[in-house]
Image (tube, rainbow, N blue to C red):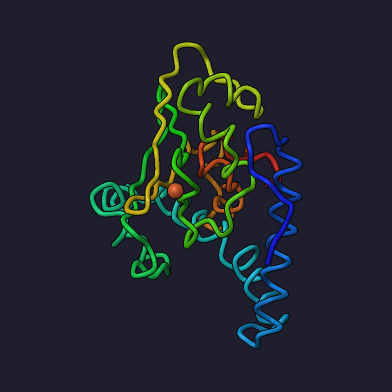
Length: 211
Ligand code: FE
C-alpha cells in the first residue's frame, strides 16, 4: 500500500489529519479485504472506545476521589490498584499515576515522544493530544498553550507538566467545583470532562443541578 501523504514539518495540522484519515481508511480496507477484520468489528471498536469506555470511567475515579478521602489516598499510593474499585481492570493499564490539582498548583499531561494516554480511563485520545505542536509546546510554555486552549491560569499558579510514557500514564484529579456539596457521586462524575482529566480545562460547574 502506498500513499502520497507526508508527515514533514511543512504540513499543517489539517493536512496531517487528512493524511492520517486516508492512511487509516486504506489500512482498514486492507484488513477487511484480507478477512482479518469486518466493518462491524471496526465500528464496534470505535463505538466502545469513544462512547462506552471513555471518558466516563476516568470521571468515576475523579468523583470518588472528591467524596472519599481514603480512596484519594489509595490513588496517590497505588493508582493502578485503586482504580479497580470503580471497575477498571488494572491489568489493562501500565502503571497509572494520579496527580491532584490544588490551590496554587495545576497539573497537565502530555506525551512528548508520541501519544501515550490512559485509554482504559479516558477512551480515545483527542487529535490535538497527538499533535506535534501540543507535545512540544506544552512543556516549554504551558501557560501560553493552556491560555490558547481557553484555560487562563493566574500568574502565581504553579503548572506541573507530566510526560507520559509506555510505562507510566497520568490522570489529573481536578479541583472539585465550589457549590457541589449536595451533589451525588454520579452527578459529580457528570461534571468531570475528558479535558479536565488531561489538565487543559477545569471541570464543569455544578450550576446545572437546580441551583
Ligand atoms: Fe507516547
